Image 1: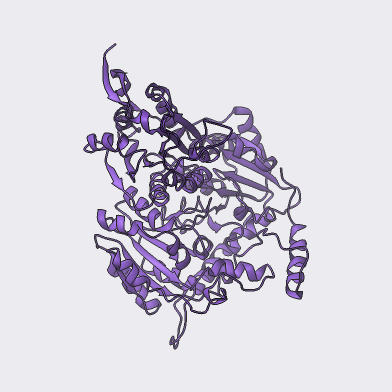
Image 2: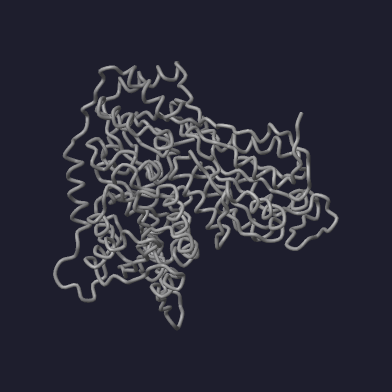
Length: 613
């Protein structure tokens, strides 16, 4: 056996550079890195040596550069991914939030935090977290519950098994998610004689599990006997690349489609079988269908509470639930009839089995009436606008009117996720939302990751002032790398979304908007100056018409553009007729009449929840 002598870090990055996807592209397309003690001497040296084949990119914060990596994987439909490395200590634990985000959303990212010395001689090293009763514990054990696969590399030769296991998890549609390889800093620098064949190119094929014949037959019979079936489209449809098959299935069999956050834009909004989003932030059309449905067919969805109206939406007596999912855990939720399979394979087999079945149990006018309402709700304000603050819906309308088939709207937290899910009318693939974890601070870094994966498309990042304040530094990274996208920064001077939730739950306005923080001086943050200081093209729109013009003007620039607009913090997206109940626990003992009334409403809605397991 021929061998080659390399350090463990050199071996890791060489091996990663040789892993390909089915299209012959590197599966790990590059490495995000912030160096410090724990990775600078080992991995830093190794990455420098292979930079022409496996690029390294510098981020500003470990969490947000991991967000960029995760957004890239999502936009690439999990066909490509990034690695992210940090120092030990706070550099590593900064990535735990990102790991949780990737875990919830079933997205592949390879996290390589530096770790303590395997030989333990210099213990305790700088930033080492010591467990008084367990000498094997380090801060990186925080990654265990938020990693699909976790390993600590304490000897070089452990990479021979750990690395293939890592890629196996990241390319398996059922187990896909974050992998953490905690890399002891002394081991990174240790040499080993590696088998040359370990570094041969390898192609990782993403399997398409076929449905079990018994489960398939059971679901076919359920659909055939249904009078009012509805399809709930989740992100698994997009990751399976099943968009066209879903379109054909829904059209052929006359089954309307409603969307989750992750599944939105699998079908263009213009598709006649797309009735919009379901649930808490769903459309009047979709929610009406779901209330009347006697069979709900989930495809590639986790049935999150926002989709189901906290399990009060699917209320028809005797209704049945089918869950088609590549992961048996998801397929069996809520006592569903399971069909464990790839989304595309399942839809193809179901359609063949259904033959000429077609449902006509829906009212097409419901869809058109809702879209008419959306257009009216998103229309530009008329008349005198001096002193008028536009709503988030009007901001969305402005971007919508100047959007093209190449526009992708993206967001993560605050008011805009619900508003966009309800109101944005995308072309196919024109929507990117991180709402499994709804992580504030994902937006700017995520926009950069989406643009890296989809360079041909126009990326519009919607972000509120609260989320922007949490994490904005990757604007500087995007400027450095000349990655263009447009940020629409809506400034409502605080956390407007949670303020409205606080009020609706019977509470007083407190600690959300700056005006309610019991402070003497209101912050006057000049977001234009702030963004410009990082090199972005920054400007403020004076009104909705001006915003439209500035969106168009931003096209063709070679760096990020930030457009700030002041908005009304008090008006949410529900006025378009799509709001639905969300189970947010209200205090059982109210101190005001308002809070007691809120509790009474809450108790009434709780009675509409179905019993689930």
